[in-house]
Amino acid sequence: VIEISTLFIGGEHLPAHSRASIGHHEAATSKPLGTAPQADALDVDAAVAAAKSAFPDWSHTDPAVRAAILHRFADELTARGADTSTLVSRENGMPITLSRSANVVVPTTLYRYYADLARSRSEEEVRPSVKGNTLVRREPMGVVAAIAPWNYPQALTAFKVAPALAAGNTVVLKPSPETALDAFVLAEAAIAAGLPPGVLNIVSGGRETGEYLVSHPDVAKVSFTGSTPVGRAIGEACGRLIRPVSLELGGKSAGIVLDDADVDVVASTIYRTSFLNNGQTCYMSSRVLVPDSRYDEVVEAISATVRAFRVGDPLDESTHIGPLVSEAHRDRVLGYVNAAQSSGARVVAGGGVPNGLNEGSFVEPTVFADVENDAAIAREEVFGPVISVTRYGSVDDAVRIANDSEYGLAGTVWSKDEDRAVDVARRVETGSVGINGYFLDLEAPFGGVKASGVGRELGPEALDEYTRTKSVYRFRLDATKAPA
Ligand code: NAD
Image (cartoon, rainbow, N blue to C red):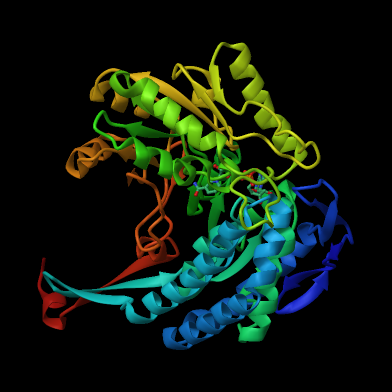
């Protein structure tokens, strides 16, 4: 059992003021895995104060020096990568092969990418004006509150922390209570890399800790990834405070199979587009739209592939689908599966708990066919290895069904004709679309529309989320003397 007894505040390991802790369970067995401290308001106050007092120096540190420190930080995370990826797989059930990439390769790439981008990008630009010129400056904002979910803890933390720190802000990170154990590897790496005290602070805790942090008077910017209901509450709090906020929220994306799609490509990419991380991925194309003319063939190909997924121990290299993060989450997912079955959706793969895997929180990879787009299984985020297949007639129909959703995060279009697929992608109301597969491009902006959020992460666009502009109007002396 892993016992983490201290928060990370001002470069020091400090016990939580209340001495309370949060229990963690191993996803594959439901047995105790460890504990992390539960930060309360006094701890958050201390963390924000540390970040605030570190801000003046860090924001004025030469970007090249900040970049060198962030590269060392990435080196230290890489050195701890094997332990981190194993730990996250035990916490949330992520298959280990994915965990190595999502919890080590992606975050370290991002710390390096933003370090280099901030070093090479000029933060000042001169624009000619009628009476002289204007200096447009990009300035860091101050203390960033970063709140992360449990599904990709290290990657989604880096989505925020890397651009925030590279741009010269300081950070208070609140990891998710399901995956607080792995967050403290960032503290070890920060110390080893020589990140100045207070630049990164970590306060583990649940909803109350997050709520208090979001509204703290000394926080300049909030960046949140998580569910839409919580995002709404955070957006409301930030609205009252007139506080900038980025929200990366839930999704119910559509994968559109066009009538000329290569069925083998659909079958071989469905794992990545719709089942990655046991379906606990925000951008999953969990609604698959299939044309009448190819319906039976495509449903059969997808379900044959899904039935062949290997379900089991997330630490086994050959596992495709591991357990869900917790028993409570498994029960929620099974609730959707049972409700869909009783409302008449046709199960063509899975549909329950896998044989012999009653311990831990496993759910069989499941495909429902003949689902109407108004069914709960097609409208609500299930966040498990469960997809629904819906039939469509024309391409216009497919686009209408895809857009008939509260959410707008991502999507997929399958077609042999890339131009035709891109035309459909242009009409889909989401923040990103994959053609014949889905794979994040770390150098392109990612985020949602509608209830999937506001703001963008990744790419150069993310640096703008952690800077604000200031215009300095410089007048020629002779121009200031003119009457008008
Ligand atoms: P969650 O919303 O339950 O929790 C996310 C974080 O917010 C946790 O750290 C939690 O402790 C904290 N929190 C809860 N209530 C809070 C409050 N009132 N104020 C401040 N903080 C609060 O989400 P989760 O279950 O951890 O993650 C799964 C969800 O995240 C899914 O809906 C998924 O789609 C979404 N997600 C979105 C993206 C994206 O980029 N759009 C990426 C990954 C996950």
